[in-house]
Image 1: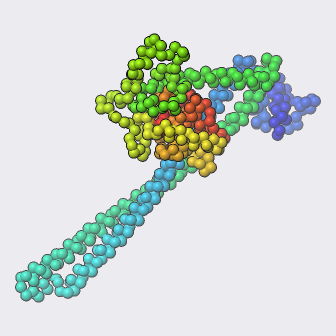
Image 2: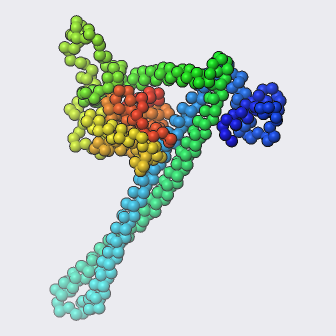
Image 3: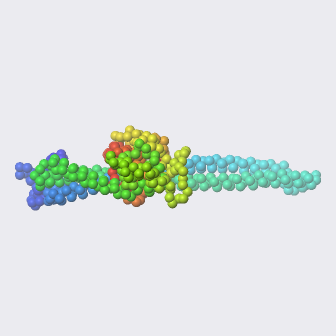
Length: 475
């Protein structure tokens, strides 16, 4: 049914719901066909909207925004669960292939051992056929020397047979163990595949739910805007603009508070080696990030005069305080080893240079406009961690595949020390890395590049500070 026609029908049923009468079409003709369940639900929603005052309508608009925000977070969580399940399946597949190769090698070794044992038995049989039994040795010997030498030969044959038997038993046991490990790996692979399929189905259902909620939210917003326009004697378009401005102001206030919380939670002195991050920023430092708590903000014309001049002349105590990885009393001269390890270190500020961060960012920006894809690594689209891992891999620094493992493996830097290329992580519970649901790459100037969720292509957008992890990550 066309939306305008359905809207008119819903309005009629809404009026009927309010006055308790039968729905009547324009011109006074009653509707001949009964309403569908969707029509009834929409009519009740329209009636509820018509009963709201201005404050109630605005509160409901805020509730819709919060509902959609939670639904988007659920989609990102489901996408990350699927990415982890895919990684587990890939690892199980590799383990199965390696176990099969080990089993094949063990089987070949067992066949070779069986051949050696058969040869030993043939040697023994020939010896017995030539009269090398105990009685034959004594009866046919010319002297004691013949007996001794013949017995020595027999012992050598016996040792060869015993050695062949022991070796064959060992390799047979190894072959059986290898087969058992392969069977176990194959079962694990099948289970991982089932988990990945279930995770994908759950992610798809979650995305479908978000789509349905978004459509229902748009319909409800239309009714709420109409109600506000009626209450204020304005137009629906004016109410839309007013509401957009109100939501923008509220979002700005939330983001400011969230950024302050994030910076307070991650002072620049916290992670070991963080001062080295500041020393390596150079021209790549973001002036907005650099002005965070724990760092002096750039001043006006008075900088460098009086007390400020004395402060500038003295060495800045902060890098000295954070350069040593207290409480470890043994200072580390350089937390960035060369050659770079694989995978990255879990402490310090990571192994990537500022130039590599810029290269990773440039690669990520080259993917702007690419569609989002569940578990995507570029064929044809990306998910969030597929984008960040691809960016840093392209810059020559290996990082893990999922956002949760990325946060655990990269170096940690505070938000006032971020530079382009650093990673920003989002979680449902920022005290628990296992609840991380999204990762983006910092672009500088308060911007980031991300693959947000299904339906939204890779984009560059302002940093969102709500629900960020305590630290940014530096590969």
